[in-house]
Length: 294
Image (cartoon, rainbow, N blue to C red):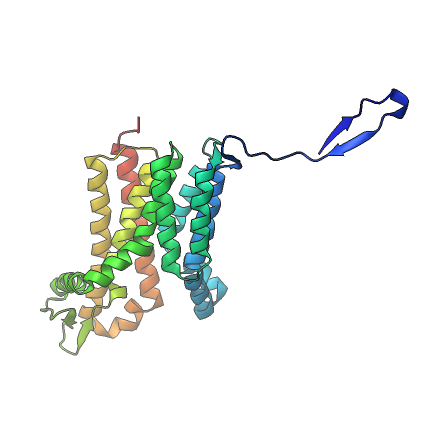
């Protein structure tokens, strides 16, 4: 609010309270583009992950759910935070009318309680920002687009090519166990039964996390894509495959340890080992060998 004195004589002066007026000029809105799209990213992510978070809390309770990062990888949470930081710290360019139209379309998708639709809307927002923005908003957009790889596109690819992917996993596990796979079935080493490699046991989901981690660090550290970046990203992917294959292979070698290796203890240990390996390899390689962005 502002205090404005009238032009009446001094003995009759009075104070008038005026509300500041928010005006839209030149097609721009009184909010920065970074703030607008950061808010949309948070809303979309919350809608897309709500079902998974609620299920994790319902099954294990708050303490365990928090320890398990609500069933969502630390890499995913970190990528979201990195994108938000870049958006909020971007130059305060005012949002345009076209931004509002895109935002309203995305908000409409977020209102529908279908997680995949939220991830698709975030992917669309990211594509729009990549085409219409300058750095660092464009850097944040690349991270948001990469964020949808493990949350949407990898799942679509698994649904389309699941059998072929699972057979690759079964072949690798068979090499560790020393038995011949049949489809995605791998016999135990002692012949007492077989392992069935389910979609949730595939290395593929974690490979998509390695891709996300690579893209996030390239943008967050403001580096350029290069052959060295790709090679370090591939190294992270191979590390993911190695950890998953070793874990399932140990089950095939020691069936009596199934509950330990396949249960919460084994799953948590494998998840954190994978996260540390991916973050370590990507950060070391990208920070040391990737050229700075010009």
